[in-house]
Image (cartoon, rainbow, N blue to C red; front, side, top):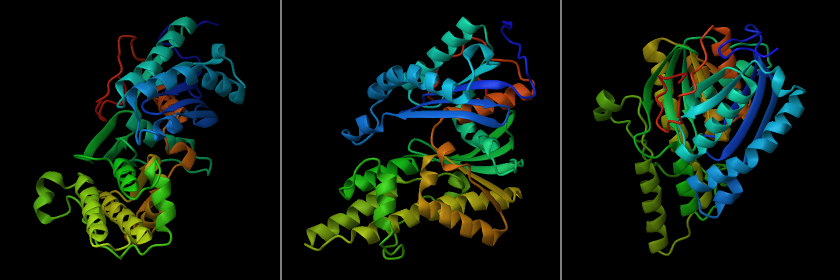
Length: 359
């Protein structure tokens, strides 16, 4: 049966295809309601490594090449056909403009060709939506504070309702945490992406060896930047410390520098997130984004949350990085809540505010 645009056959357990192309990972996910059927991710990270960071034009071209094979792989993994889909969900922002355009264009083409409803959704809220795909029998309880930490975003959210009420409490005013990891790794001569390599080197170091600054944590910052983050000063402090050692002809204690830097990032992230939990009286914290793969951030989050009596929720790590499954999951939530689909005149929006859950 061919459905008219705007209708969904199975509203309670909709079969949704999700497309994610906001940065350097081409993600195609398929969910049925809150059940994950397929999650295919193709990364162009190796192509960007030679440049020490993501090159937007390279990312867009890689999405063009990867999208069709990833789509075919996801359909095969889920054991469904395009005709069986109830709707298509796609990241419309925020992200890299050229990369977003590839996913948006593909989603619109599929929606028109298949005569299926389309849901244009927010990438950041998608990270929160990934939690509905957990297989441990628990479900996300709202409201919750959500801390999203990735290469391009560091955001603190108050999520009252996943599909209708998300408030931005704070975000980075300069470098995102993931960018800081990449820049410090380059400073230490470690490969891109920096997070996993700093994690590895830091395991042999003393996190208290060097007291690096915690940005925007002074009393003077509380009025304007209570829940905002800044990692540019931390990156500079690490650079100056390392330069001083090298200028003095001394060996740089790589493990101690990596561990102390990692500790500073984890400390300020969790301090601000738990401060928000306390201020809003919400005993729940959800972590999302690729930087959550960092071992110390997860470890410190568990310690601090347990001490504060706050429930900690972390989606499966494969759903923390950018992926199409989280976009499909958010699309399914919108369908189940009875939200109408997006019209075809939406566009890729690199600065889409987190308060705009559906474009």
